[in-house]
Length: 151
Image 1: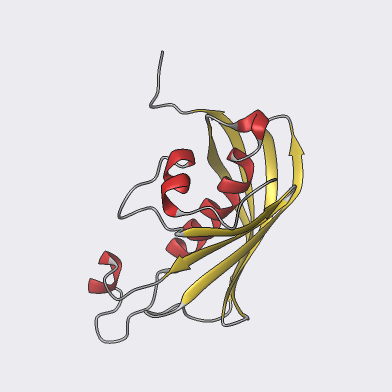
Image 2: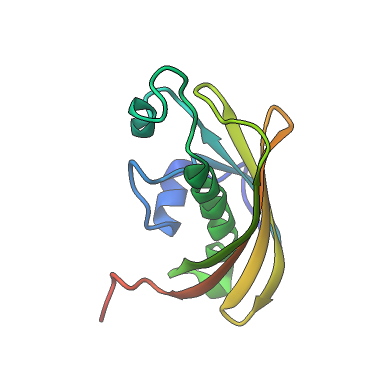
């Protein structure tokens, strides 16, 4: 796919329906057919750090998975045949967490297509902080029209 340098937050918001505080990808660094790399800057200002955990802030694992899934979704919806569509998560398998994600970290997710048949697929995603694996998982999804845009 032809990208100038990267996909910035404005372009991401054109393709993903998520918004603050649930938009968890800040930039797409690389995208090819079947592979993508995205970035989430983790800051102390994230609302979840108020309660998880105030004395030792750690990004909740489920939100690490969500950030990974959003990067993977960008890979799918950037495809010319999938533009205007939304990915809906249908499953998460083999999720493993290897290190905590904390304020100040840059969470870099690389996702690769394992299978895509029609509008159903699976991707493998790995998230890293400072080249150290933070999490990995297999995501299953279906691509469909945005359910909120009826008509």
